[in-house]
Length: 124
Image (cartoon, rainbow, N blue to C red):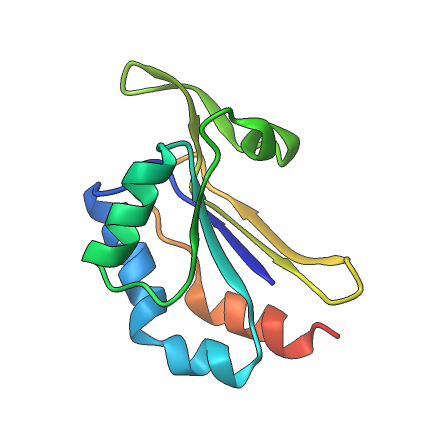
């Protein structure tokens, strides 16, 4: 399973990141990966963003910040907004063990997509 935390739908880097996953979707399918995007946007925004970008995986709303807080991926302040999710990736094996954890303090930095693939390929 891949959890992709992203700050805000429709922002440029978030769009680039999630579309990069979309554009290599067959690679994820080949690894039997379940992929979920997670942001603090409302469920209405995440669903519209998913449809607009033709993303083949669900985008989940963490509007109450419970999941982002549990994973420790909230900015205290992000361009004047409080409690926005950081850009982060967690790859979790079928055994529940976290195989990859990457959290960026710089929202303009995209994850290492090859590292995600390696973690998925080696996870049980």
